[in-house]
Length: 208
Image 1 (cartoon, rainbow, N blue to C red):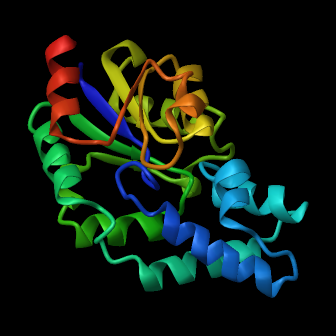
Image 2 (tube, rainbow, N blue to C red):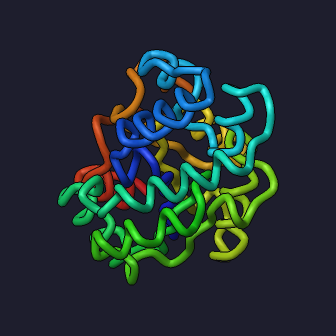
């Protein structure tokens, strides 16, 4: 295996509760409140643009920009656990590590920096870099192209149905983590584990 492609929200950064709270605040202001159950049932794993489109029934770039600004205010790197940081460092010693996300680069980079991971990440593919978000595989295909790696020589780690669908459409081996959704919703992945950690890295590298 030559590359590890990581989803960001809910996988590397266990921040889905924070995202849920931000969207609840924004949608309540617009008169269409969102419950936690509705967020995890219908919206978790979607890009900001797609999430807003699904819930409001229309595109709303202003709401997306307000979400990005609010996330940047609140996210401080603490959502990336010490175990996840160690896992990234362990992977980066042996592989190219990329982040493939439906979030904006301006949200991802500060969190990686606060977690001390900037130098360990070879490539970031964000919503700024693609036209079609997960479950479309474009983000993963872009990352593979930049890295110069074939899908057969890489693996993805995801936490949602949309992310798994994107990884599988890119013909990647996909590991799902149960940090956002229950295992039964992740069954399309090649394997399901509790979370992203060094044990997973060791197993992926040794089985490659």
